[in-house]
Length: 329
Figure 1 (tube, rainbow, N blue to C red):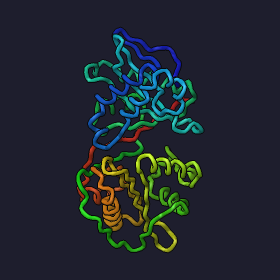
Figure 2: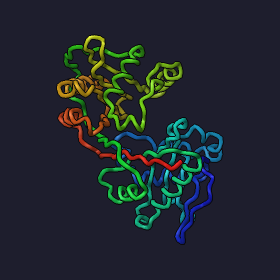
Figure 3: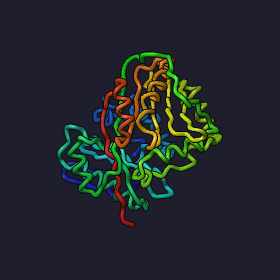
Figure 4: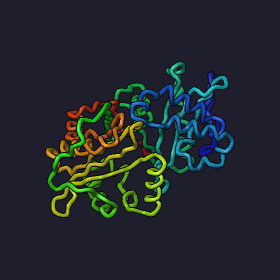
């Protein structure tokens, strides 16, 4: 249990620290009610993963340190979990925490439960010497937006989650000058591209670290393990001008039953003519796996990528504001 603080009570119920062995199944049910259709459209397996963990019962108290969603608070009313906030230490070295799965059962909304849960969670993070809290919220969710503004959160980015259902049109990959497949030896070039392509405001919150790109033995073993168990593969191609990587497309494929991913990165000075051929190349490559859908996440600051994907039958599933709250020291 990440948090062990005094319960926050009200006449109709109370907030208490989440207990994974006791609450995981109930939290999974609540997340499915709140976000089930959205999770299903993007192929997100969060609810299934949580139910698999719930089946461990008391063993969860042993393995909870490896589970990314066991911290936080639940709201209990009449012996039933009707609200949840999950808190995860995203970067312990900098004191940055990530809050997610903020959900209140529809039958209990409008009673201030979400606010009390967030207040309890923020206080728990402060007690653990957290320095800032990051979360994401739907752009069109005005009640949640109003709550987070009152708590002091500010926006540092907005991303669009896109989905393209159905069969892909062609396996013929277009000819793209300067395009080649990227491997582990290209990690430094990919790091430089990521730093150039990511908005400064985002990097101020989440700095792009070399360790996320450096090909360690552990990362290679993880990729092999994912490929062995589920056939999941990540493949990247890049466009080079001389020795400089100016753009890249990344695909994550996992077979016909899953949702594939396609992501684009382009240096700001090269944007405009490259996004469309990159998207075509990635979609043609994914056609070999025959996925039932392809998902992508794009910052709205990269308008050219949004336009290219929307022109290839991607639709916006939801827009998410990325928010941060700096905590007092």
